Length: 146
Image (cartoon, rainbow, N blue to C red; front, side, top):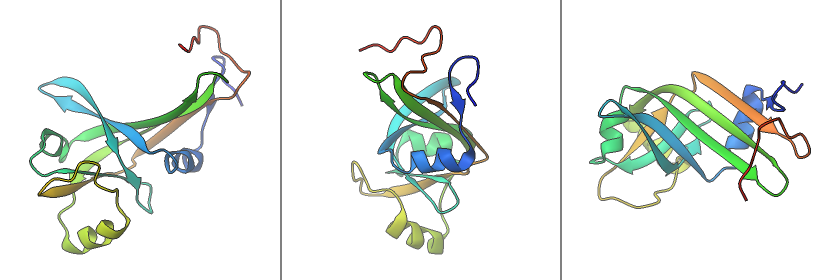
């Protein structure tokens, strides 16, 4: 079912399926009381949690540990005027449990820019929402820039 704006709301399982094929997403967090957005590589855990790998000394690791954050990923085909966007909102934590770290070292995200000391950040999928625009269903006011 499409809403008045031409988008279809996605079910949680569809959101996670789409996210699993995306190579990069954006973590949205608070930096010095202002919103910050950072593109990152990621992986999904078996329960849909978003996993990020970053330097232990990074501002990101310090800023998100214990905070509620959002994570967004999408895919847009400008020529076909279609695409989707998924947002996961939840509490982020730096993973410290040795057994969990060992498991995630095998299944978690690859390091895009290896650092001497890395940490894994886990974002619990407390709220998962998504929208899809299918080719040919252009909502009023949607102007994709080519």
